[in-house]
Image 1 (tube, helix red, strand yellow):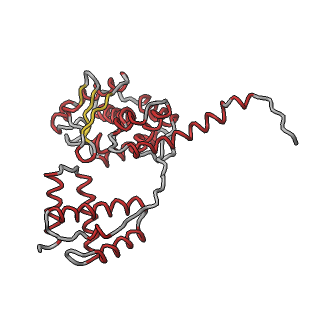
Image 2 (image 1 turned 180 degrees about the vertical axis):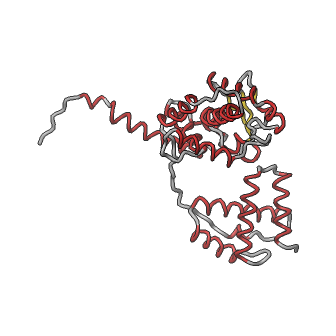
Image 3 (image 1 turned 60 degrees about the vertical axis):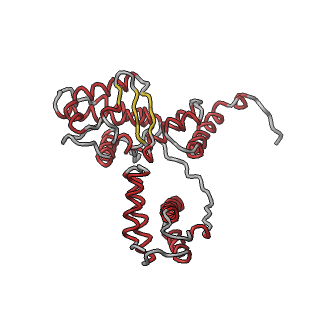
Length: 306
């Protein structure tokens, strides 16, 4: 049997070219498998070695991380079994159960989103120089986050030919190379995208991506995070706002407005509706607030016995 390094290399090539998994997923698989083999220190450990490693994962990481790392390992062993590289898949004898905990996503209060966008538009640099181009791009990126609920790497990787500025339809490549379309419905958002495109058309054509950096390359995830942090601070917002919080806020506020959860699932690109349903719990907090303030019992004069 070939070494584990060669097996992992072939497996990652299979994931990249045959399964067409995205770069972030491949990176996670690579890290997870490297950590596993560094711990077990043998080419193809069996049930006992895997059990020891799973115990170590529970000792070091939170439940969500443990679950993902075990899933990476399980997928690798399934691949080895399907390719008949191993006869006996040890994962068939390993039971992994998790006590499901609901971690409510962090959202941005509506007034803070409003404050951030108002700051952006109040500080429009109309000199038409480089600063104006960057202002247009950064404002367009933030508007796109809240308009689409897209992940930061999805926004960063939108290709130039995936945006129809006439209709406002954007093609987004999600996890696992899954494709979905999201409509920019607000005319104001579409207007800023058009203005950005017209002012940055050369850089966009050079990079091939809709959101381009100053060097004519892709506007990277890290650069977007730093940009958002800068404008949040300048707007006087103390909360640490991340790109993903726009996704959470987008979903929560749609559900609060009565949008069906299956529709939100489709827009977000979730493969399972269970992932989307967590936003119902968040929206329930808004329901509690409404009922506290507006319930008709509040207006009733009820005398209780002492």
